[in-house]
Image 1: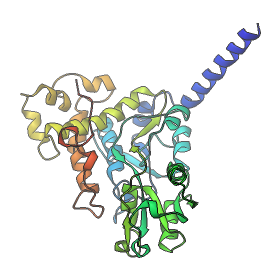
Image 2 (image 1 turned 45 degrees about the horizontal axis):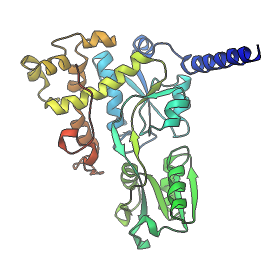
Image 3 (image 1 turned 180 degrees about the horizontal axis):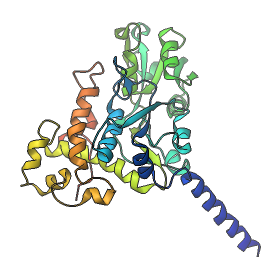
Image 4 (image 1 turned 135 degrees about the vertical axis):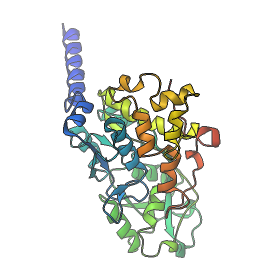
Length: 342
């Protein structure tokens, strides 16, 4: 009897935990359609990823994922409202239903995916953690940082990564963590710490906010894997599929040479079956997701393919000037690889 009771208790606990993680909504798509907009959680201002421009409009490679999902559902990329969140707030906001989708330069890890009642549904940027220092320190390697005071953002993977790196290299260090990224930037700019550590893309973005950006350098070492991507609530598979395939579609569009400038013409050329499925001139892929069959056309027309969003937010004509590197498509020397639309 004791064994049966323990098993029944375990099953009840697991069911309760599962229900708790999905109790906010059984169908985010229906909720989004009923209210007429997508509530998207983004950063509090990370250039290139999610930040308001001079006109107060949100832009960035993360913002473009939100816009792509809006285009897929509504046929219009601008049916989005943005919620700026700190690293500490982001997961709670999604769990509680404050937001429908989280796209906030967020690293997928085992613990986050398996224990928070959330699902990662793709990678829109492959990154890694690095270190930024004032050039005046004369340091050219992270291995020369013994005894350094390090500024970082609380509630992220960076603290643990830094601890692992310094301990494995037998180097003493001191962490100074702030809840808001702007507080980290201000402390580093004021000289309260020797080193700023974050994702390398984040360091490039935050360097643009420093008083004299050219006085700082990002050291060559990359000490972690940081696959960044959108997050949805666990158990809401249909909405998760829409987000996942919106991102996949943008990558497939780049691979097929379809972009916002030529998508109208490409839709009239029905000679390519894969492209026909992508643009909704053949098949019923939209029906399978519960959205209009021209969802792919709308994403490309309204937002563009993956290469376009990378170029306008992170590429050589932006202040960040981040090379594509591993974020190139798989057939161009990178590891961005989307499942086929088949």
